[in-house]
Length: 276
Image 1 (cartoon, rainbow, N blue to C red):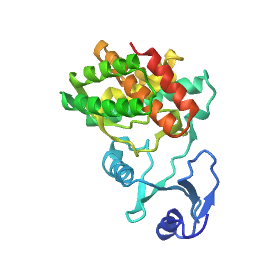
Image 2 (cartoon, rainbow, N blue to C red):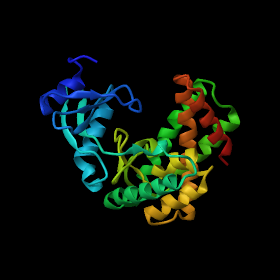
Image 3 (spheres, one colour):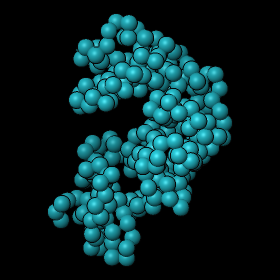
Image 4 (spheres, rainbow, N blue to C red):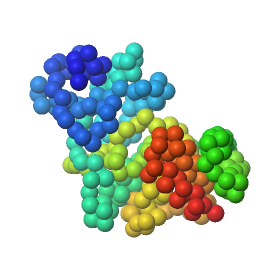
């Protein structure tokens, strides 16, 4: 990594001389640095303008609802789509042992923190969110059909859930939309990170990745999470979650195919088979 890396330039301009701290768990476009006082920071460069703008807005606007549970924005370079954040102390929650008390506690704390965000930004039921999600699902269905990833029966099953979404009223909130243990940090306080997907969406959709990637195999984690969140799912919300599984399945199939990711494709196939 060289000094003309935009992330290092941003850190140098705002912090002075910094050193890079190797962190194998970080994705390639993210780097951890430490300043002369020993403080740790995260520098991140986005490839896409919309994700840069979305993450920047999240930290500047909605991060206030997560005080003490999220990194803080230190600075940015719009020209290079680069941001500098404080590094939240802690270990990623996906590094704790499966089935351990630490895993269950992490889900409880994750529910509590997400509940804070949702309660602060919740809006009452309306039809606009469902219509947007239905349109988005139809887009993924079309991509799956063009790539010959689903048969007629599977297409009909996905279209059925798109129709449910299109005709449903649901409350909305600012959602993380990639809410899973790899984006949770366990330390002296519980933290969350990676806000590039954050936007207003159907509130229950923030549970979808956990439901289809974690909870169905470990329902006690669902119980712990919802206990922390402060309220259980009602019957309508459970039905919505099933339809959000259709979005999970379609996107996983298409992205898995496009990126030649066998694991993601298999996940999409599994979720699709579970849909009714």
